[in-house]
Length: 303
Ligand SMILES: O=P(O)(O)OC(CO)CO
Ligand SMILES: [Mg+2]
Ligand SMILES: [Mg+2]
Image 1 (cartoon, rainbow, N blue to C red):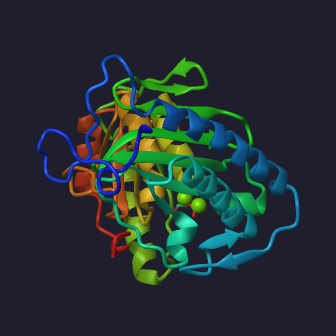
Image 2 (tube, protein in one colour; image 1 turned 135 degrees about the vertical axis):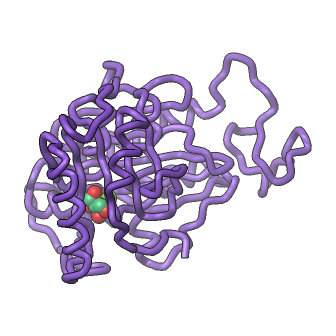
């Protein structure tokens, strides 16, 4: 039987744990190694497609707002990744940004589930602004197991495997130990809503953090790569309202494995489907930022 088959389909759960997906214990072996290796290979392949398309003419359409962009390459890359994974792991489930936009259900179950952002930074991609990534996360029993993020324009491959650390290429990642907003370099993204009320809240949140003497606030146009910068220790924190589970899944493992923390903007545990996040090198900094933010309602991914 292949690793990663879903208990709800063709494997019985072991250990009497309800519907939870469990492997029989395999000592010293990582049950998801084959999946993670496949994710790295696919991210590389997808990244080459994105890099080539970057300089070519694009067909750009909009989704939830006039600034929420999608191109034929987003669709092409998502199809490429999901069809390859489906062939290799037929019982697994998939959540993809563009499949969700097209009406597929965005629900996390106990089954092994791939969570994919085919191009994170589509607006950058359209403008040829360099931070553009392919992001592949993987969860089992609703827990994130590994994340792979490939920076398509500079070739950096970020990986994180639960319990085994986070890396950029072969270099181990470590977050900073900054605890205060004062002195922190903070990253965020604007989100797709541009109505006056949302903009007021967005700018108000920035103003608040700047008033506390944050060293700076940066917006680079790719949530996944911004989160990788926090994992790398090149920035101290990230917060956002209006991102999605495919922006967060892979990056969350990478930050946690780099020693950092990823929480909900309420200060509670992260809810992958809640469209909001605070991530930081330290829990103190994450909580301080969460405390200052005014909520911007973006709904949920799973309804
Ligand atoms: O370019 P995408 O995938 O729409 O993502 C945005 C955030 O939702 C930038 O990170
Ligand atoms: Mg994205
Ligand atoms: Mg995307």
